[in-house]
Image (tube, rainbow, N blue to C red):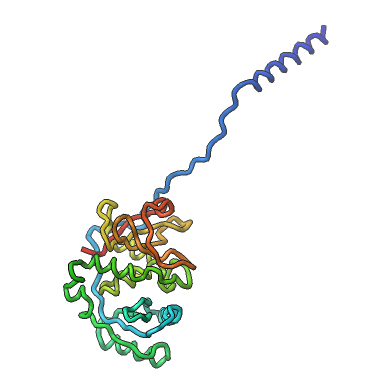
Length: 266
């Protein structure tokens, strides 16, 4: 009798086990990746920012090799000066630096650097030499067209030494500074500062010469910037070992990391 009860119990539990095995299993939980939703790094300003006009700057060097221009740029930044190199129309690479309030201040700094052996021949660029100061743009164009054309002149130049941060010759924000300064307009040096002090622009209102920002680092903060040139494209310094180039905002990498846009132009 006891043996029959035990057998019945065993059969009962076996039947339960079999029925559980025959039930459809739960589907495997899929990994859900939340869409990129950046948090504002700065509170947008209530009034539109406008880039200030350049004062006096210094131009030095005439190099056949871009690496030599980059080395001079690095030395000048080591002196606490905002500097950049660019391809001059003469076929040489030249370096510009500083934004001084007076001719005397610019000349004094140039002489100091010459005495230190950092620069040799130099030229002081006066505020009135910029087209924007004369109220003139290239024929049939505007300051926005000038900025795009200047940015295009940088395409193909190497991104040298360092990441997209301060003190890297022609890093992403340094490229922005260079393009604007060559057109007589001064903007902050770093991408965070450029984002923080520019006037917000929504995507439908994005115009040539405006700045587009991305969060490309793990911090989720602004870490990259480019110059919008129209038709969904922007020019930027993409990273170590690469050359300055144009990319599309629709590119998956940049679309997923887009942070916002700012303008310094009227």
